[in-house]
Image 1: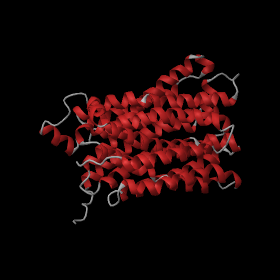
Image 2: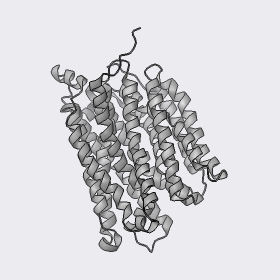
Image 3: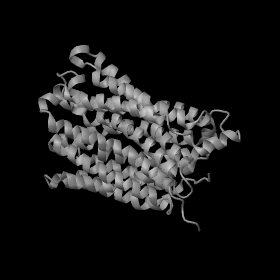
Image 4: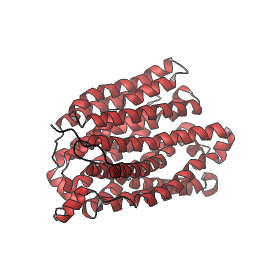
Length: 421
């Protein structure tokens, strides 16, 4: 059996440009979660209880997930018909502009009830953008990759996406380290949004240098692109693939949202950990997550995803219980447990490979996008508010939730179909 081809320089350039834009988009999306407590203070009435304002803010955070299916389906439709590159470039613009506007938006004291309503609309625009970014990126780099290197290419892009979370952690950490708490609360919280919007516009310009994928060009030359609605073909012929991909994406959302994005505000609220300590822990967790995702995704080039899922699923549950169950027993060691939880998130690297193999090229973009965004709309959208509501009853609610999602993801990955091409 011949050894897999190495990634040539042109494809490394494609990966770098794709990952840069994806990292900036994910940065724009997640800084909202990291700044949830400050956003709650600025965009909701001070007369409300702190827990209620935080729950409402996580509701706005979840609204971005609810907007994902519409944006993802529309962009994937044009991606399967008109080409991957155009949609892949447009998604960055759709993310950068709302992020910039968030940094300039006056708060509740100035606009009253209009402030959270405008913030809701901007958050939904971000959700529509991110709905096309990750699926489009996975399809784009996988169709550029040489035979036997799809897992490596997909893993490097996914690592780039999680790098956006890492970038957000670094910016928030630098913000808290250079400004006083009063300055951060008054105006400093706007800086991460302004930076994200500006750099996002730059990423859009860079993405114009990307080439269309060889797979789409070949389909176009053979007139094999979808001539009817790709979503209609999917719902008629690939319902099983959609269901399996939705459930595996649920596991991905549980790992990212519960163990990484919600960890700082939850630890601050549940165990009174300082913001700087939680952001340092988030930084460590994201670095470990990135390493784990790239490693596990690369392993799919030599191992079946379903087998890797049986290994990574239990590890994910163990990492969740370590983070939310054991870390409170060892004050001052949050970085250690957060890093362990990040290393246990390797299942995230298996999910995109499983979805890419579940759909044929003609409807691949739409299939991955539809499944991924339905899952994020249902589970990603409801999870933050649900866990914020359940944690007063048991601080282990996040770990229990992640465990249930891990079991569902393992089963779905095991029965998911694998198609050639």
